[in-house]
Length: 184
Image (spheres, rainbow, N blue to C red):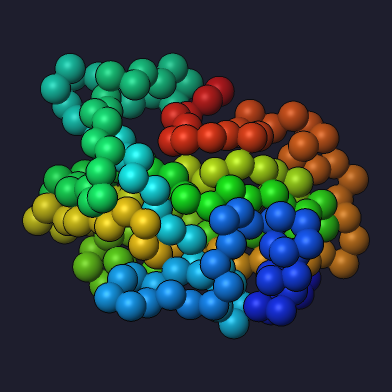
C-alpha cells in the first residue's frame, strides 16, 4: 500500500468528486485547520451534534441501540460534558475509490486538550458523510467547534482492487447522510 499525496487527493476530488465540498489547501485563519495537506485531508465537523446523556437511564447496547441516550445539540460549537461522549458528522461527503482504504485520525489540537476522535477506516467504495465520535477524557467540559478541522483522513492505495468492496456487500453504513447511530 502507498500513502497518497496532496496532488492525488486534489485530482481525485476535482475529477471524481471524491471529497465534496473540497477545500484546496490548508485553511487556518483563526480556526482549527482544515483542507488538503501534504498526505491527507483535514475534514470539518458539521453543526450537527448528539451528546450522550443519562436523563432517561438508557442502556448503551450496540445490538439494540436506542437514541434515548442522546440529546441533539445543533450549533456552531458543542460542549461535551466531562468524561462524556458526542457524535457528529463531517461537512464533507466522501466517495472512496475501489482500490483505496482511508484511515481517520484525530487532530493533535483536540488531542492535546483531551478530546479524542475515534480512529476508523473508510473502506473501498464506501460513500457518505463520516460519523465522528468525540470522547472528552478530561474532568472538565470540552468544546468542539463546528465548521473547523476535526480529523485527518489518510488515503492508502492498494496494489490491486479487493475482490469484494464495501459497496459490493451492501455495507450497513453506505450512503449515510447526517449523524448515523449504530446499526446491527
